[in-house]
Image (tube, rainbow, N blue to C red; front, side):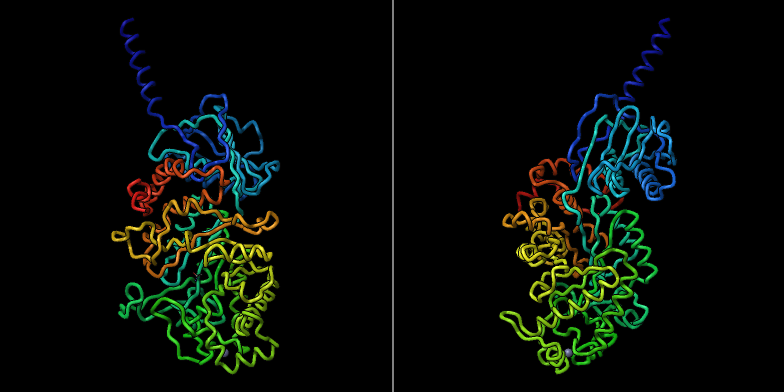
Amino acid sequence: MKKLLLIIAAWMSVVAIGMAQTPRADYRVVPLPDAINGIKSADFSLTPQRLINYPTGNRDMERNALFLSQYIEEMTGNHLSIRPTRNSRDYADNITLLLDGKIINEESYRITVTARGVEIAGKTPAGVFQGIQVLRKSLPVGPAPMVYLPAAQIEGSPRFGYRGMHLDCVRHFFSTEAVKRYIDILALHGMNRMHWHLTDDQGWRIEIKKYPRLTEVGAWRDGTTLGHNSPVKDGIRYGGYYSQEEIRDIVQYAADRYITIIPEIDMPGHMVAAMAAYPELGCTGGPYEVWQRWGVTDDILCLGKDNTLRFIEDVLTEVAQLFPGEMIHIGGDESPRVRWEQCPLCQQRIKDLGIKAEGKQSAEALLQGALTTHVQQYLSNFGKRIIGWDELLGCEVDTTATIMSWRGAEPGAQGAQLGHDVVMTPVDPLYFDYYQTKSTWNEPLAFGGCNTLKKVYDFEPVADKLPADKRGHILGAQANVWTEYITCEPQVQYQVLPRIAALAEVLWLNPQDKNYQDFKDRLPRLTNIYRLYNWTYRAKSLTTEDEAND
Ligand code: ACM
Ligand code: ZN
């Protein structure tokens, strides 16, 4: 008897220790859900025996179920099988993904956890995917045969529909695998747009079948300036491009994660790589070489030649066919007009179009406006809308063009007042190629400036002065990652992580629900996930020492 009691006691202590060691999920993730309400129930125990149910025949939900299974395995080491099901009785004791038409917002989610099961619901598969990201981030990182999920109802809804990250793959080129990992980072943070900068003076990175020299010649430069545009070049041939097949693959990879890619073909400036391949596209006829330095050049597309317009249309035709999203970014920034002022063909075009300078707007500015309007109309044939940098506001484009406000927040407010949709990407604080601290001596070379984690967190996309009826024009915000000084993938990650986490809260939470200290307290569980995937991040941004310096 005594022996039996001893065995029972020993067994109970094993169970007790086991229980004490069983980790628990914590739903206070980044970005923070709108509501986490406890439910009177025991915890749900997440074990490998649980199944992930999804509605039979729904391919998007099946993919969602596979993602959840993959994430749980990565986080805990446990493999859960997925199961198509139509019978609600199958749901008990398992995790169930389902669509619920009563949920209002397309990307909202509702997670319900009781001892009897977990339900992740959304109006759309995209909403369910957002719920899956929350559940994933709530799990502890590390092998665990069982994880307790506290009983609760968790709900979240993004404040903005456009939640973007940009990546410049021109100044430095990143492999398709690196771009996919970047998309993985976006998905983890609840982002839904990737602005892909594909063409510029330093390289042409997208295969265009009709103009093979764009990539044969334009994708390669004979060297790269060292440091901040020093006279010294490294003399190393550098380049690369994405084939159309690779682009389709990346577009699908992003779409599977409910991320729309917005390609940028910057025009009429930032086109030297194309002009190196086809010198007749420029006013002087060249020769041009793919640029080896950074900055802005006077050499831009010649709009006096019909061939240039045909070139633009042909390129955009292929681009429109590759990218199913509604928006195509046509750049429009940093286009000096000195060549146009001197080019007889451009001046003739101005005359032929009956363009006359108006107040502060030169005839050449209005010529850029005419190009933009032409492209806008051309792309509307493909069901596309244009988005461009805020310089477009100075060119009299119509309000179907979305404005990307980069030279501060003011152009965004001005664009919204005029009736344009606007995406906020002000250099301060949303240029993630800027430093993250004032004490830069121990940081990788960056553009300059100082956009700390806190500055990003405190950013408010909607200007106070905007009247109520114009606020809806602010579609959201995006951080830009220009890569003049970012030469490799770990450096991209370092510039982005963890600032993207702060941006995610800007885009998901209402301003009154934001709290920087609380965000910082939740951040270490997110950076545990960065480490799980071997992503490079700026750990110092989590310390108070860093804040004291800034
Ligand atoms: C820009 O940074 N030139 C848009
Ligand atoms: Zn010209």
